[in-house]
Amino acid sequence: MTAEEAQLLEKLDLNRLPRHVAVIMDGNGRWAQQRHLPRVAGHSSGTKTARSTIETCARLKIEALTLYAFSVENWRRPKSEIDFLMQLLREYLRKEMPLLQKNHIRMRFLGRTDELPKGVQDDVRDAMERTAGNKGMVLCVALNYGGRAEIVDAMNAILADQNGNAGRAPITEETLTRHMYTSGLPDPDLLIRTSGEMRVSNFLLWQIAYAEIFVTETLWPDFNRARLLEALVEYQKRERRYGGIREGQAGPEKSARVVGE
Ligand code: FPP
Image 1: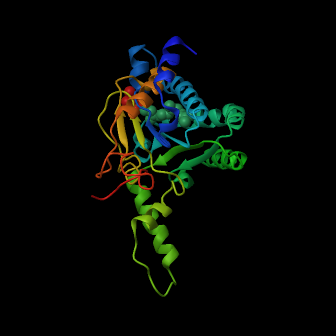
Image 2: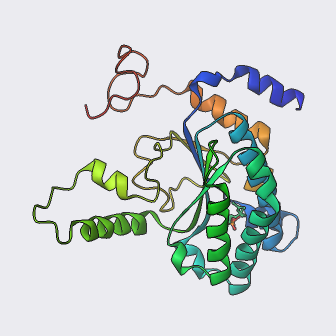
Image 3: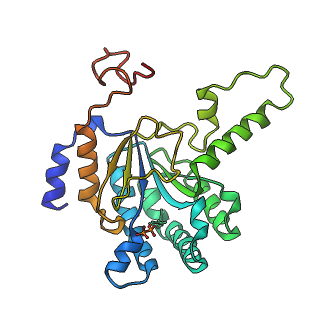
């Protein structure tokens, strides 16, 4: 651990960490461009950042980490770049399995994974099956993911459930939450976006309703452990209000979340 990391770790209250951290990993292309390298070199370097982020979050015992690896819009990129990203993910799953297992990480994939190339689908299924019994952090990789597509898929799943049922129950927020790809996970408390863009980019639209957003100018390949710890320290400085009163001031039973005022 570097001196900077140790200092940041000291500032961190381990009892008030976010339960779920979501990350828009942006800036790989710019990172490569700055070094006169092909864009894909930025993606390769980005996997190293993914590795350190995953390991750090798992060690901090954060419940869930979601990484935005490939959006439904990313199919518009050149075929060579898409092929490279898919290959990188497959390699990552193969190479990093020991690290995932060692850290008791359970993998999930969020998105229309049935539209991915066959080989990727096989590896995705394999990674989920091999880590299904793990009880540590849930690592979600958003792959062929779109926030609007997710809401549409949830609505269609609800309709399919209701087909044939005589009495159709009205749809509630709880029903929709249960049919999202993230079913069973807490909503992200912290959304990190690297490389400075102030956009949500169709990411977890339903789930980030109350998330704190942390945007950093740092490009994803440079987002090292210190920068992640910095984001967590910054998160803890924020006053979380949820439209109600300040967290921790609602009395013991109500301190978790006060919504809807
Ligand atoms: C955005 O940078 C990044 C991506 C579209 C891909 C992210 C993928 C990885 C970091 C590697 C694989 C991930 C895992 C979980 C192993 P960009 O190309 O949009 O950068 P730019 O905005 O600078 O062009």
